[in-house]
Amino acid sequence: LTTSTTRRQSSEVRKAEIARIAAQLFASNGYHSTGMTELSEAVGLGRGALYYHIGSKEDLLYEISARHVREMVAFGEALADRQDLSPTQKLRQLSRELMRTISENLPELTVFFHEVRTLTGDRARKLIDLRDRFEHVWLRVIRQGVEARVFRELDPIAIKGLLGLHNYSYIWLTADGRLSPDEISDVFCDLLLNGYLSRVETSARSAGRNEVEWTDND
Amino acid sequence: LTTSTTRRQSSEVRKAEIARIAAQLFASNGYHSTGMTELSEAVGLGRGALYYHIGSKEDLLYEISARHVREMVAFGEALADRQDLSPTQKLRQLSRELMRTISENLPELTVFFHEVRTLTGDRARKLIDLRDRFEHVWLRVIRQGVEARVFRELDPIAIKGLLGLHNYSYIWLTADGRLSPDEISDVFCDLLLNGYLSRVETSARSAGRNEVEWTDND
Image 1 (cartoon, chains in turn red, cyan):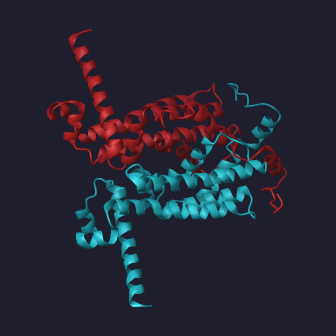
Image 2 (cartoon, helix red, strand yellow; image 1 turned 60 degrees about the vertical axis):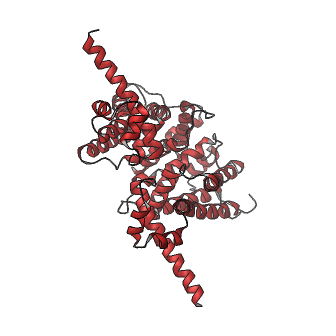
Image 3 (cartoon, helix red, strand yellow; image 1 turned 180 degrees about the horizontal axis):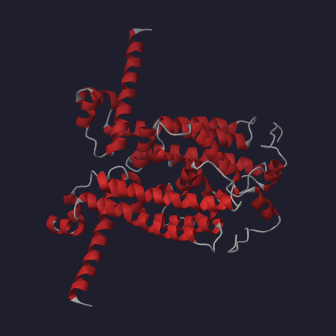
């Protein structure tokens, strides 16, 4: 390794450490409430050195918010293109990737969800664009399933629902939870694919009845 | 009306106005970033008069966060007790109530989701208790459905998923959206009850196959 490569790598490592500590502060106290003095103390750098690593405070917010969404978009767009997987398999893989990402990067994803409207100008547009591309990946996979007659066609607002079902976990996920992110994803996919109604009910529906009749003595 | 009743009512109205304005400020800028000076300017009251109406800043945060959850708990517990509705009907009513509440009280619900960990001591416990009771209402309705063999039994983590599917809408709901809260709820319930898999797929499953086979030429 040349000295400049080593220096660049160590600078990347330092930057990643700063981003992690900043994400924790932003997630607990809010972006606006976290001062640069507080951050420079938390990372053990003077303000000059801190700005050298991060650019501006808003650059840092953008980097924290965008990084994992960018990675999920790359993962998802490659997945959606694949011909060797069924739409169901793609849905399951997207779901697992999302649950793993949220679970392994809770402070960063909390910052993304809470501060997505805090960014301004070009950074705001780029982040919204990334978010839309990720949503579009799910929409594509669902459409592939509809075209293959594996999935039913639902109003596209259902995509917001299935994303929310996963995303909202940033609020309740804990590191010591009973289930792993993969196990949670499996339950969620079972719900999203098969629904709550039992097969008894399903056959009733197939026979043309919309809902089970309900009587007081049931 | 007696003078004191009128005065009490007008004080309640004033308090509600303050809570609405505070919710908007807390939702946009964060609770910690909103100063009492800023709030007193926004509501057009001196700090003394403001504190007279709200108690402390944390009292105000609690009232904003708790009010709608408290109302949904009351609605949900009464609903879960009813014998004349099927579990499916109860699920649909819970879903509509939640979507309406979020949609009509976006700033308040944003504050609830973002600041649920900001409260301390007794207020924190009371708010968490309300949130748990609301979650328990959904769990009860699902259990009623399982007992009646209308719903399948899924791991209880699915409740977090179906709550998240609704709750996350605080991030994307807009007043001028294409669908009304009730219409969104109907799509969500269709997804939650019936799942994405088409009936063709459903019959394949009933016949013992777990997933559609997928080949490159599909």
